[in-house]
Image (cartoon, rainbow, N blue to C red; front, side, top):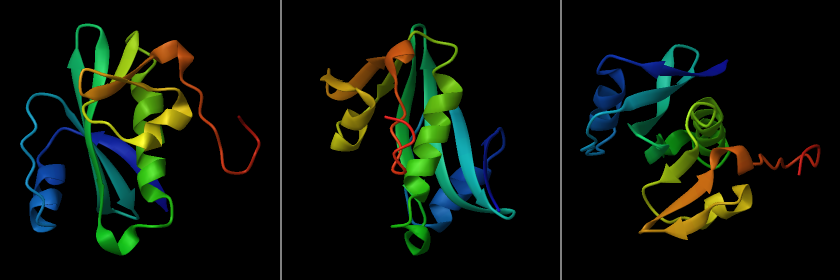
Length: 125
C-alpha cells in the first residue's frame, strides 16, 4: 500500500544518501513516499513568507515509470497549497505546465487557489 507523509527525522536524507543522491536542502520539510513501510521516494519543501517552495522530488529508479513521482508531487502540492497564497518550484520543468504554473525567476510559480489537478482518467480537467 502506498502512502505519503511528512517526516521530521533523518529518514528521507538517509534514503537519498543510500540511493546515491546528494541533497543539500536547507530548512524545510521532507515528505516521504512509502510502499508498505519502506521509503521509495522523497520530496523536500521549504516555506517562505508567501509560498511553499518545492525544491526536489525523487523516486527510486526501480519504481519509476508508473506514476509514483506524479503521485508524490500531487500529494505534496495538495497538502501545502492550502495555507500559503503561492506555490513555487525551485526549477523549471514542463511537467508543471499542466497545473497552470508559469516560469518565474528561474523556477515556476502559481497562485495556490489557481492550481487545478488534471487527471489521466478524464474525470477532472
